Length: 299
Image 1: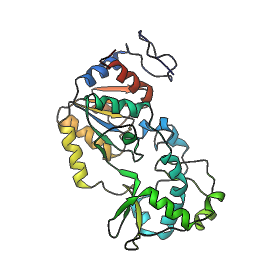
Image 2: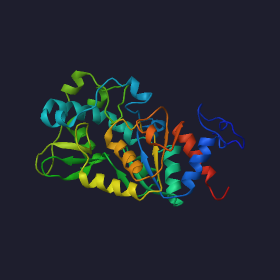
Image 3: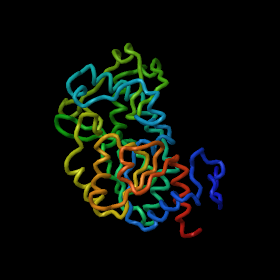
Image 4: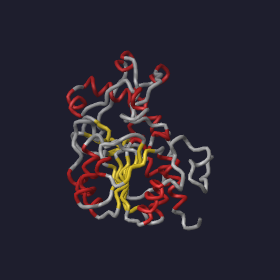
């Protein structure tokens, strides 16, 4: 366990690159957050310390499989079998993941009234698990499943039980060393070919995880809700997102258009750096924990 130094150095025992509390950029970030009305926009980099890899950061560079696209999923029964086989194995990794210090810090800042809203690009549910409220899951959540025919939503746990019943003994042969950010696993073709998928109990329709695949649009009302939240913010705080895709970057642009300051904490450069008042290249968990501690009125 690390602790915050009183001086300008890195917190004792923290990962390299963690700013000390006297670091000018860290102090500026603390001052901005202390003013309240913060809207958080979080990305995959916030969850890597929980063991969930991202697509474009350090953990993403070792990923071998390309993400499933919406068009491929709806257009190919073989692609759906491949997705559900890999996801059935990889889901355990997502379901067992626990919130890290970054998630807990965000929830704590919200509890104190400094964070007024959370938009997450992540589908892992870890903001909720950390105790955060009213989280807008921009890309949906892996804990739910939706029928593409009748629209009925069911829990992922129910689907996992049904898939287990349809594939007795399959797990005994399935082993993987690589888990992808969207919760699927790299598998050999023979294991995929042997996997049986299940359909909607109500109408027999195709089941899809209740997440936005690549090539699929975020529902308009959800985007509008996020825009309105950003427009009311005193600060847009981006945490662990490269902002490479427009899905998240558009909110940085909207903040900039309305004269709302943007602060970005991420490991590595982002697409939004030019729009930001402040950027901080640092590990998320230790930095946010230090931020929450620095703003603790009891200190």
